[in-house]
Every structure is written in C-alpha cells, then in structure tokens.
Amino acid sequence: MTENPGVSYVMPVLNEADYLEEAVRSILSQDYDGEKELVIALGPSDDGTNSVAARLAESDPRIVLVDNPKGRTPIALNLAVKKSSHPIVMRVDAHSELPANYTRRGVETLFRVGAHDVGGLMDARGRTPKQRAIAAAYHSKFGFGGPAYHSGAPEGEAESAYLGIFRREVFDEVGFYDEDMWRAQDWELCLRIRQAGHKVWFDPELKVGYYPRDNFKSLARQSYASGTWRGEIARRFPEGKSIRHDMPPVLLVGVGAGLIAMAVSPLIRGHVSRPVQFVVDTARLAPVVYSAATLAAGLKSNAQGVKEKVLTAGAFQAIHLPWAAGYIKGRLFGAAGTVDKGRVK
Image 1 (cartoon, one colour):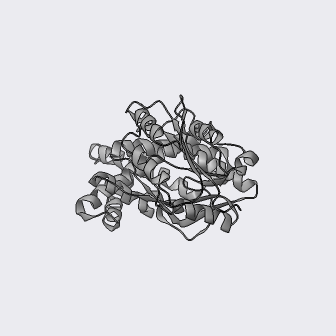
Image 2 (tube, helix red, strand yellow):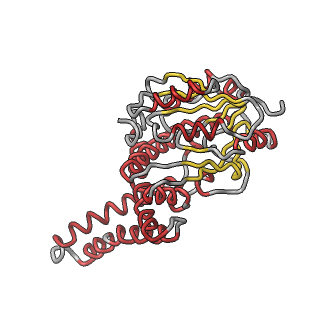
Image 3 (cartoon, one colour):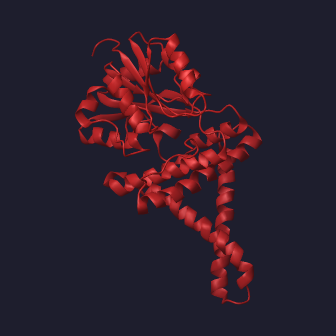
C-alpha cells in the first residue's frame, strides 16, 4: 500500500442546493495527507444546484464537474468514477457530511482488513423537529430492521456498504454500477464484489452525518421507491430474498384488511353469523395494534421531547407501509421506471 494514496470522491447530485456546499466543505477539509479530488455528476436540477456547484468548482481546482443529463444515480456514479483518477474511490452524498477523520479511517480499514469495499454507519440527523423525528426513525431497528449501517453492528463482513470506499481496481474486475438499477445499485455491485471473492466490510467507526427527507410525503415516496427496488432485487437474485423483507407486506395486508373491517363491520352486524362477525371484529384490531406499536417505538426512540417522539411514530408508518406496497409491486411486476418522486419531478 502506498502511504496516503490519492482519493477520488464521487458525488451524484440532483436538487441539492440547500445541502451541497456543506457536503463539499466536509469532503475537501478531510484530515488526510493524500491527494484529493471531488467529481460531481450534475443531474438536471431545477433548484439552483448547478449554479452552486459551478461556484464551488471555480473556487477550488480539486472539484471536477461532469454532466448527467438523465439524472439517474448509477449513471452519475459511473460518469464520476470514469472521470476520476486516484487509486481510492469514495462514494459520497450531497445529503451527507463526513467527519474529519472519515477518509483516513476508511483507507486504513480498507487495507487493514483486506477489503475491496468499506462502509460505515449512517448517522441520521435533522435541522427541524420533523426531520429530527425522521432521523430518529432511521436510527431505530423498528424503522428499518436489520441493516447495520442504520442501527449499528460489530465490525465485520457485510452484505452491502453504505456509500462505499473502493479500491479502484475492483471496477476493472467486476464492472461498474448497473445502470438499470435506478436504486439499490450499491447492493448489486456489492453482490458482484462478494461473488468475485472479495470482502465488503462494515466499520462502525465510520459515522457519516446524513440528513434524511424533511417531511412525511417525501419520506413515503422515497420509501415506496426503495421498497420497489428491494422487490426487484428479490425478484432477480436468490441472494436478495429474506424473510424479514416479507414482514412489511404482511403488515400492510393486515392493516389494510383491518381498515376494511372497520368500514364494513357496522354494515354487516346482525346480518352475518357470529364466527364471521368475530373474524371481522378481530381484523379491526390490526390498525389499532400497529398504531400502538409505532407510538410505543416512537416513545422509546432517541428523539428529543414528546412532540418529536410522536412525530417519530408517524415516520415509522411513512417508512413501513409505502415500502411494503413498493416491495409487493417490485416482486410481482419489477421496478423498471420507478423513481423517488420525493426528489424527481
């Protein structure tokens, strides 16, 4: 290993005017002695993002801009990786802020454990009460379940990596991001890296500050797109199937059946047999039990104050139910054409 090898940061950007400057500052101020460059792939933003990026590039020659007219994340990543030049490639995000030691720790871990891709913990945070509540849902295992990069796990080999710190040669060996995977492209790339016999590694000391969606509508749209593409993964790859991914759809069916039961129960009472009425009345409990569970989880979350804890309960529902609907759609029909409408108009 060359001491302090050069690092190329690659960033797909679309409608990030409010976050881009802080993200870039956290990258270029890294406590790392190796050479740095930041390649930003600019999608067709309509909020002034490209003007912000142009101003930043004019002020720092380490910033390189490439056009991504289609605006798709995997295309942006491939354009940026191909434009970059250093032996270490780090995927970064405009909604994220890197701690000062992120690059130094990431490069050290990459070579210490002999990995070809390293990722860390998504340290969700917020600027407003609602965004802080959504961040608390990200941190809770009740929110997203198993992924180590949301709620933490011991250091070790992983299925996928948040963002990703790569040895450049891995792209020559296994190929670039699959441009047909509009979401979940990182999981699919990690699958090919693992199939090639290389390590994907989780290091909990790599904590990346991440600002999630700041309202429930955008969160629900993002969750639906994520669920749809997770269903696409399960549809395409035997390795992508998991019992835990089937639980939200079961929950959605139960809650949906319960809401229907609430509507029809008064209409059929006295007109059906007691066993049928018992089944309908029992089904009515599902939405109540689920709402109580989300409230209990919200009150136990790391959100601050009763108001934010209650908002976190709402965030759980904006994550679970749209994700489940998307997953069913992705499993049955595929995810082609599904975008995160919370960001793309």
